[in-house]
Image (cartoon, rainbow, N blue to C red; front, side, top):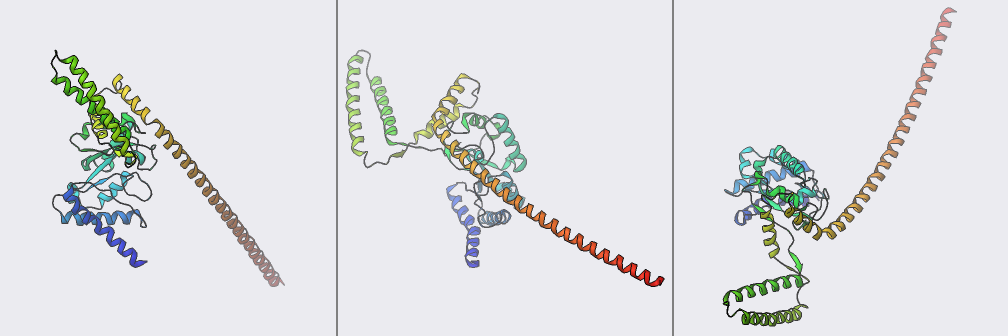
Length: 360
């Protein structure tokens, strides 16, 4: 056991070193890991040593540690973890260290980002606990699960429990200007939906192209030709799709989702959150994610009920044990008291006998 644990310990210290050497080439961020079998203090100490060694071995790389959802033994849920970690690293290294704020993870860890007030409270706490100078990047994701769920499940912007208002807070915070923002929202979509969308875009593009090439005098015949061409092309696409449906997976990646979400986020800059435009966007996106939110809320409530029942049971056991302990202590104290009374009574009898003896 000692040999296996020592090898694991060696790996946990050497891994960030080799990882950061790769990061230097790839320019990506990393998560701070987990405590696993050790205490939080010892895990943070190992991580600090590993980061120092890695920084000494590199010249330009800036390790950016990502906030986590706080599940299990993972490091990086509470902001205090980063505060403790930075305290273990000499300040000379601080300019080459950073934190990446993941909106989904932070929300799942228990920090509310939804209203302007709660967002500002969080940012103030971040500045006080860690320091805004360490904030180097953001991962922009909505959350499929409720506040404090400690689950890492990303949702598309505006469809999750964070909602569009949270991202309005982010996009209009001047403290975040010039910081890179990375989308990690899900892009898997049903194959038929993606293909239909691509088909519509292709048809629209072709129609637009044909209309541009046709003069006013030729427009009627041009319209007819375009419609015929589009219909035949549509038929071909559909036939091909049917033939390949059996071999294609049910879900495929649709990277156009990211394009639309980037445009959505950019549109929030300077938008009045009380305007009809914003309210319409917010309601539409919330409706898209309603079914998934209800599902996740039910799972969350069920899990919380189980945890509360477990806590109540453990409390009952502790109370019972404490009660038995108190009764045992009371009995012991009672016995000591009786023994003391007997001893004192015996002493009085002895003293009386001696006095009688002297008088005689």
